[in-house]
Image 1 (tube, rainbow, N blue to C red):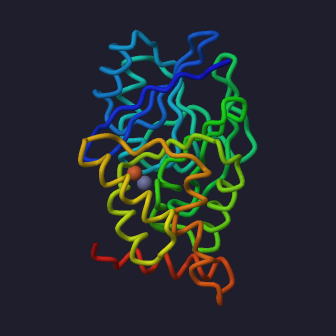
Image 2: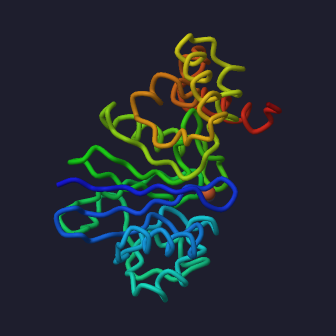
Length: 248
Ligand code: ZN
Ligand code: FE
């Protein structure tokens, strides 16, 4: 059964997502970047939020947990690390399944940006909610994990089917595209970057993306091709380090 996604911009560059299982009407929010924006959006849609699904503990992802729960009675599901800053009702880990009505979301360990970061994958509908792990033409900074851990996480996401729709938590794509152009001369990267710049000029979101588009143009997934002399995780570490200091 279809899963409907309502995506909205909030804070300075976050995306909020409300999702609803169409068979049962059960709805959830992915993370809580901005509680009031989430409650407004749910109200406008006429959806009742039954679950909060956290990806990681950062304030722009779990900071609104208490307020959204207070307003809706939602059950909060996420990785144990969320309790560092916010309430959590049910801790989940890699391989667990979260049931949203008739929709089943598989929990994937994608640590690296934070050590306990998780993603939610709806295999039947080919959708993934990846938080701050994989971005359109980018990836999250390594605040807690090692390059090896992040590379393994990115490989797991890249292993999903190409047609998988990827919902990333930030609109960073124009800056990511500028960096990609500085390290990758592939024509597909140039073409996508131009498309991204044009979309942003028109004020359009570049999220969601797809696994196929990221495999073709994301410099972090392409790191082993860009640094062929290096072992893959090492190649990734170099490209990530270059992005950390890139002045685009
Ligand atoms: Zn984060
Ligand atoms: Fe974030």
